[in-house]
Amino acid sequence: VDTSNLFGSANTSQTAPQPSSMSFIGALAARFPAMKPVADGVLKPTKSIDALGSEIMAMRFQYWYRFLTTYGETFSKAKAQSKVVMDTVKPPADITYKQLAVGAVCGVHIYGAFTIGEMLGRKSIVGYSQGKKAHH
Image (cartoon, rainbow, N blue to C red; front, side, top):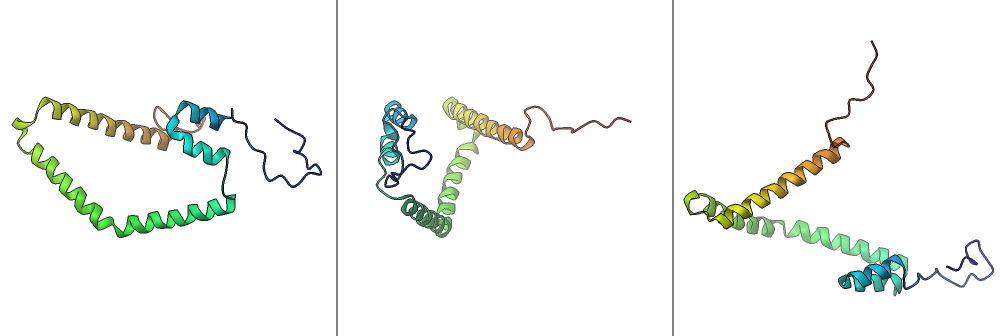
């Protein structure tokens, strides 16, 4: 790592130090090939940070606009999918072992997510924090 420019040497034409090819991002891209486009964008940036920030804000606006304007369509699709689930569950004698296993796994996932949320909310793995005990 070149530390000659860390404390403001005379060469100020350099924009930012370029990470080495064996940086964490490079190693991540080597380990997970799907991350290569992201790593290339980080290691060899083609836009300024301001342009990138503007693009992120525009895409965030586009996301929320599309999310809000397509809410009715999303709701109707969910309604149709819930009908399929209800039609499957209503005659319980017709449920296969595979459907029962998939339902059990989904239930365990949902319970696990709920439990993790509870632990994060309490900021404790076991029980709620009681605070300091008062001496009487």
